[in-house]
Length: 636
Image 1 (tube, helix red, strand yellow):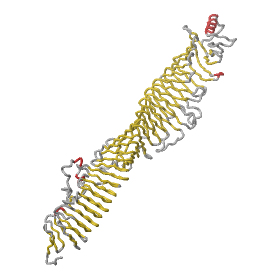
Image 2 (tube, rainbow, N blue to C red; image 1 turned 135 degrees about the vertical axis):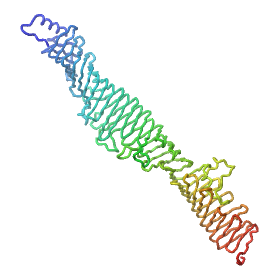
Image 3 (spheres, helix red, strand yellow; image 1 turned 180 degrees about the vertical axis):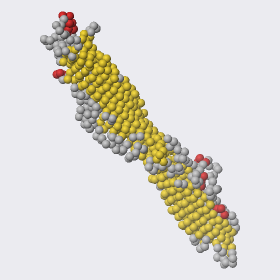
Image 4 (cartoon, helix red, strand yellow; image 1 turned 45 degrees about the vertical axis):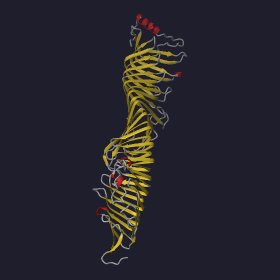
């Protein structure tokens, strides 16, 4: 500031008077709107239409310039609310002041503080526009934003850095532009190209923050770390001491949390301050995704915990909280090279102490396709539940399934999708269908007429010659199939009824090696019929034909075919088609081809090749069916 020394000069006195006149100084009367005055340095107040002080420019010294501006040193800009309540103070070493529009500017450093402490600003190069109440910082902007008063984090300010700032003091809106970075005590880190902070008009910290253009957010809550990104983000602060802050992220919104990766058109992130010490199973962060919502999460592979598959889920919307995600609206899920799923609603749960998927629950028209080469198939039902620990998938509500060549349905179906072979448990009524192309379909029932697995009649197309097994329950595991009763088998060769049925399969699961039925077994083949308490059939691994059949307990058989006995009874019947022999034991009784009724207390041997019956010392042979004595025994 130029000082008046010695006796002074008339020239300097006139210059100061003209300068003061230029800014409209009126010392003796109330100053009208837009006026200013000097007292002990430089001071230029600005009043509103009601005569209330709104802005005041101050300085220790000033110097008029040729362009009509003043260069003011130790500059201060002060703004006021009603009744002269201090609002904002800006301080600079010097600045240029224009009286005509009460604007101020400088290429130097400026520092701004709010009287209520809700905002602190500083930067290099500034301009004050009195008419709009706008402050512009053009370089190296640094700011401090404080949360609303009364919150538990009110003393944890947000520090902001940016290339440029525009601050509207009347609306209390600060706009940061260019390489914006914001951080709150290591808890929140945010970067974007434009950030708009709306401050409380009457103090109390910021109310909302809007970020735009390449928004990236990192958030730490206790031991949990979260990341999010998008084109736009709106943060609304809850003013209560224990409330929920909300972040509305839009435009290709994405996030990472607890090993998950997600995204949507719109992503709402709610941070609850009620729980300050989150556990692995309970997090204070809630994610709500809307529109083309997607989520990617890790899934262990079988018994190898070191290998991880990924589950990707798409839906119209979902919510993720407390280690649980709830998807709704046209849900599509898929696991790498394992399965795909479609449903109206899907819930996924992460395990305690781990970020990996533990359980999946799907509802509303569930459709699952198994695409793994070992477990290829399809599943349908009203509800499905998958448990990672055992690899079991459970379907209920009109469940239908197909794995490899097998297909079936039941009240509840459980499949072990991680098993290398079909592993199925059905309860509440089971139906299993085998296609005609499977040899097993025609080999489930031993051929009573020829003592071999009856082939599918050539007149029946293979696709129509399927076998069906109905039972109360079924279990298929490790090459064994167990049916619980009542059981009914329908094949091209006939039918079989029993209380229980057990089938041992070959390594490929396509042929039966052993068939065991018990509990009032009834076998029907055209005009042939057999009844027994139990029937066990063993099949040849080479020819798939019957090697041996044993029926026990009240055995009865009936046939009207020529060259065969018509009816027989006993306690045990053994058939060995390989040598064309049959053995009837336990008080056997039977009729011959001509109708001769024979009863014996000894076992009866029957040779299918010679068509002879042998009863210890007697033999029935030929079509005459006469009894002939052997070894000198008396005739009956």
